[in-house]
Image (tube, rainbow, N blue to C red; front, side, top):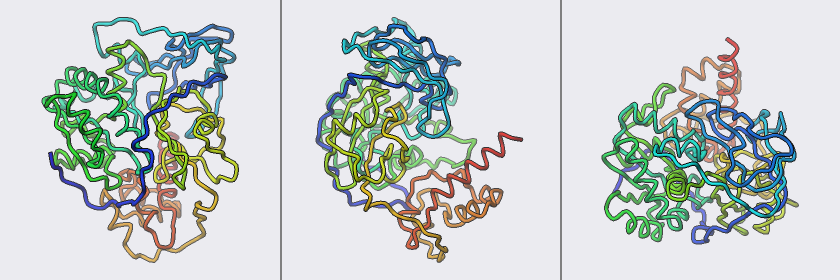
Length: 431
């Protein structure tokens, strides 16, 4: 199927050296630290205490709401500590469970249930995207809005990442099973699988597995094509209003990452919960790139070591990719459900931002994929004029980074927009 596109965006000429590399498994042999908040569903309640023996797949964190996602032990061994305040990847502090591995990798499976939503909740499945949402909550929202189109997003979030297209090739039966389950839950009439038009192996594999039950849509990998609302526009030709009160389900669609769909298939077929992340690890010069299947709770330091990447002389280690990722302060930070990839940036590749004055060239307006005027929004945020930033739709910004990428005077627009959003939300919570 041919599809449309979206205005704006950029074409990044980056060689994807990891695209054809199979996933390598990383099972930690030492200590894992598992934060008890790994999605937008809130903090889970600890179900273990210091000294408890646990097995892989055992629930160690239970959601306070029925739509939340449980959190599981990812190694077998002994609970060394339950930390009350552990530094979270995105800031702040959350509880965390520390487990000392016994190296046995003993498993406990999910309880049998006739209700697939119960299985999904018990399995701890979230939508593995930029902002992970518990999957049960997202499915219930789609049902309530009678979404009749399921879009499986196998487009990689950033050009340096390849885990989604690779997962579509390697876990095709899990994806097909997941599609059947989700389609049945929401009553979808049509299924689309969005994949990079250059990922021939993935297209062939999923096409054979689905046998015509899904429409394969090969899309041009113009960045940021993988964002949900841009996918919907390209595939269904429908515009999603960019307001805080509106979502993709309101126009009759549900978009889920291919990793999410594969996790559903695995939970239904094997009764196994989420204990791994499938991510790409790479660095700014492209060397050492690998796709890895890594246990949640594994220190990022250990993942980099597996890939032969030393952080000595490196400038930044980023959770995600160079356009939308978040720099981490410490490589002891564990892999969680929120980690989309790991990108190591060399010191010489780091941009140093000096105070600069906007020259009103308009490049950021031309390139913005959601039709904003980024220079105005970031300018108001920088000056502390948050009500003016709101008047110019600051919350419509998807934080893709295209504006900062093309800015000739290198104004860190996304930085100021994120800062403005945070200040506005802080003001709201104090009112």
